[in-house]
Image (cartoon, rainbow, N blue to C red; front, side, top):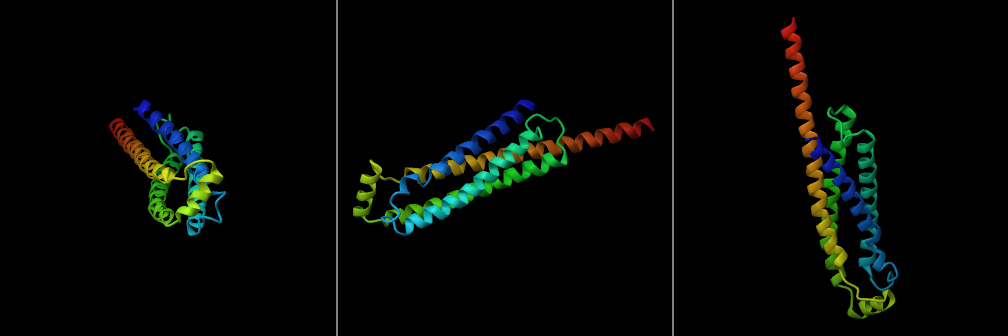
Length: 176
């Protein structure tokens, strides 16, 4: 189980890095076209800032888990439980939030006039698409599953800690 624990926390690190890369590049294609994109630009910036804040906290919590050796501790301490549960909740919240932004942003993008999209594609030097919004949906699913995995391993560690305490208590009672 120790290898599973290590893999889950390494995957949490990788997932958090992928999420941050996605967030950092999210509005890049639209940055030049602020004057051509209308409400979409403002909505995308608002979503990007919120997702960045969530991603930053996820990175911090993943780092805290590694500093506390959650990836390899046989016995979890209170700090491990608090940080791991916080990470899993934040990952699932970020996944739901990111997913929630993608649909309305896609609808808002679809309302941009063809002329403005043409101007934007010329400025950016390529086709302007909503591929990054589709990627956001995929990353949301991955982030949510990763949050469940972290929560699952944390609950397993809680279970093993409870069993360990009961066994210790039984041995102590047997010796008396």
